Image 1 (cartoon, protein in one colour):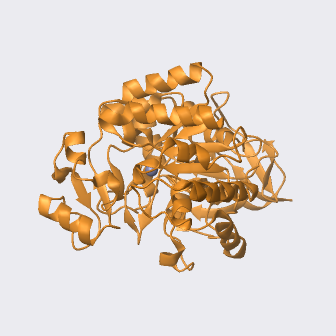
Image 2: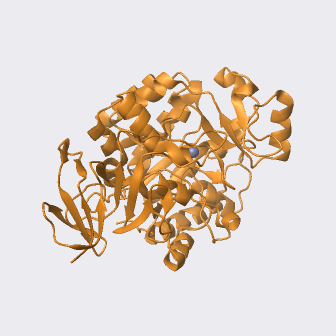
Image 3: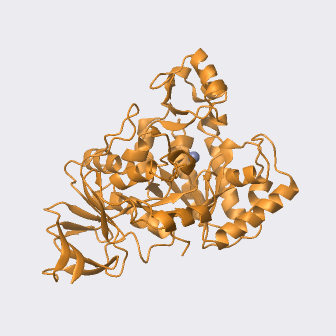
Length: 454
Ligand SMILES: [Zn+2]
């Protein structure tokens, strides 16, 4: 007797670029059979001609702040589940809300809507060793202390180190390399960075990340490249990344499918010279919480918000759509949400990225074919995370993380004024073999697990 059986669906075999009219059987959290006339099951899902895909893997997002959610509710993890994500990577852009092992403990106790893996973030560690000055270099003693913390976090199962360079411009290359002293050359790990600068400084920022990859000798994920380079420098950036890969560096990229980025208004990203640098005015910046909720900045509002509401998320409508399209189509680019919310406010990418990518960019604009699109959100991130032998494909023996969707209607519904509206077209999301979400209704909040680095 199977636990669960999916019938009448079209199974997506993205590797061979085919749709299979087959049933899929699940037992004890794993896919145990794929074929016709499978054995009986406790529960049967009729996928009625819709697509049955490996669960989406979000290689770049930001976990909720448990101090705000009081560990009693989920903010972003519910949005992830509703848009078809079954596994997500937290601790990006140098930032953790808490130690990865603490997240692991919380999830062991109360579960989580989706599976999590975690980086250990450089900026988080800077805070722990007492360097709170974003413009200051860390001392040799602080760097040594951080290097040990990195080693410990990786020993505890973190996947590698993330950097938020733009958020702490005092970080030198020596510091970035120094904190990896004890993990150098461990190619089973992964480094990721939010670049140092964007727009006309995108290229030197990519050179710095490639130098980190080469010097620390660990594969490297360039985070949300569009918010670095889609201000007029995307083609040069992608060409440079291709050149580095041809030379033997292992660089890959993630990106979210929106032409606007979001971060806190008080951060260094919004220093006054940003406008000159991007060639825009303050009216391109939209604020997300009272007293400026859904308002565009004037100079006065910009200054007041930075001074008095520095933690409020702001949305910068500054990126170029044609460059987003160019990036999505590139073979080294995976799609990831970079989702982040504070009190349910923020950028709609945290609730819409994957349906938007499939509906707007793959189906409607044909930026790539369906199978390539599915690979960018399933098997590519799975391989990058070294989970390729258990996630990212519909295969017997693999984890039963599955998303069933209606390709005719799938689309994002979250918008800048209302950033957590669930998407259209997600029928079912199955996490570790259990139905966790049906349509927009969450059936279980605790099917997800914390995954230590394989
Ligand atoms: Zn970032």
